[in-house]
Length: 359
Image 1 (tube, rainbow, N blue to C red):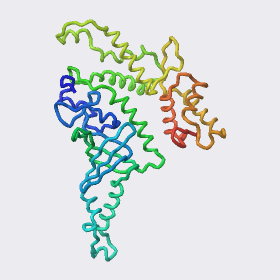
Image 2 (image 1 turned 120 degrees about the vertical axis):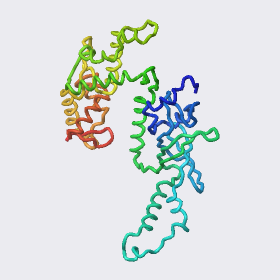
Image 3 (image 1 turned 90 degrees about the vertical axis):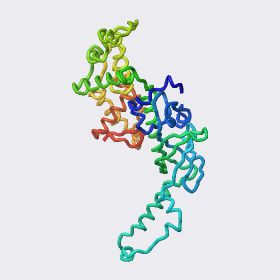
Image 4 (image 1 turned 180 degrees about the vertical axis):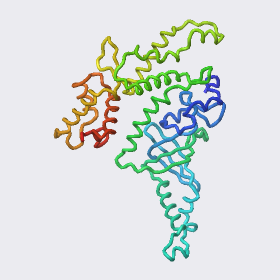
């Protein structure tokens, strides 16, 4: 990476991703560029990253006295994972060291720590000794050795997932992390804050207002003034001792910021427009009692049908019915928020992934 485009290392701590195990796809881990300032630090969308969290299938393996070397495939690529053996694991594998010794406590039926440690070693050996085709989760720092990218595992273990529930949940969660965090570039402005912080602040301000005031519906001009403090005034711009630059006015900036916030809230299902017309009215999903009643009625009625009696109604079926009977503009995200609330209130239950029945 060009040193001029790289954020200064003293500012990396401002990015919360830096201190977390990033759940990146293997493809992106292999393509990350290494820092020119600090070896062992990599960048994805200018996010400084040095440790990752990967779930994948073992496609090749090598074993040495001190470590296992697994090739892990998550469907986007294969990465080499170096997994060191613990002392307990080595002793469990060595019959000379793990031989049983008789103790007076064991002879009297008491607690035998040596035997228990042996059991623990055997259990750990079973979880850490993987075969090709088994599912493994690996967490640890990323390294480049002999021009090959690999993970130096700090934690690794076999994952039992007979019905692929863990893999499905993982593949649903990771794209969400990309949309919400990884794909948003980490940028630092003159004050040291992320350039995207104003949108995040504005979104939080609107959400807090809707929650505290129990707002059921609103128009953009009802909440626009709440974001005014986030728009720099003309006096602040002049005090920055910079030459005036042509650009959008404060009113235009406020309008654009509000537009982006409302789009984010719609994408997350927090609000939706029941009817799209010139009167730009937004309904707050969790406060729309009529929507909750419509969803409950659909699930209650359709669960009685033979087709849905066993597994319940799929979320896409419910969404289609809601759009036919209530509003064409209800998004899947809004519906999922309603279903989650109804399930928390014990009005419905999920019989399996994305299927629901009424209680």
